[in-house]
Image 1 (tube, helix red, strand yellow):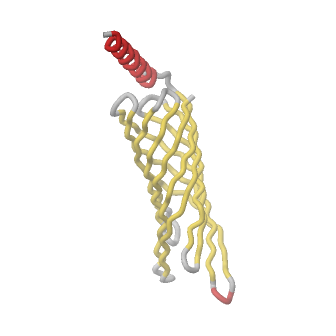
Image 2 (image 1 turned 180 degrees about the vertical axis):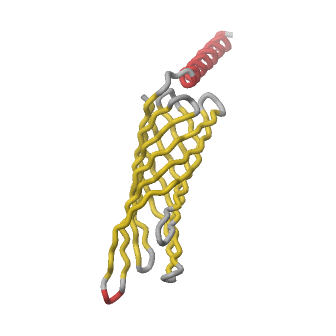
Image 3 (image 1 turned 90 degrees about the horizontal axis):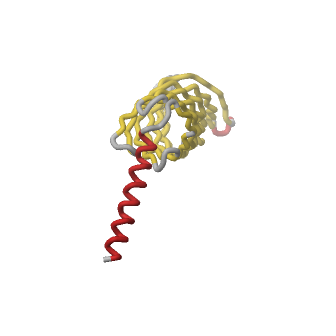
Length: 190
């Protein structure tokens, strides 16, 4: 009987703690500032029919971001993305950029939400083409383009969240490269 009472008391205490944690997450003060860091894999593809060139490679990327969550539905986010070098038989490219995005969330539970995001990416690229015995040529190019994505977010506590995210970048350049990014991020909300 004492075991049953102890287990019941422990269960009620845990249930109360869990509900209190969820109440803290949903009843937060707005707006709130957050920051995060992420790691991902990306696919870089382009086809240059004028020069009969195809390029397709996968690599890693890192990102850091800071944002403002105005309420449980709307956030604005500034991020830096560093895409590691991708290479093919005779060419290689490295891209990095700064983006500004709006994020619209749909809370499913107190701790779990899905979201869509869209924004603008200002990017710089270093491209190098191997010309065999003639050596190689390199060029720097930059631009700005719209991107979009979707993801899921889980809040462990009021301050700690994790995200799984997919983003699509369609860079408007002479070669029209496309980048698909899958990433995981950890964020801290102040």
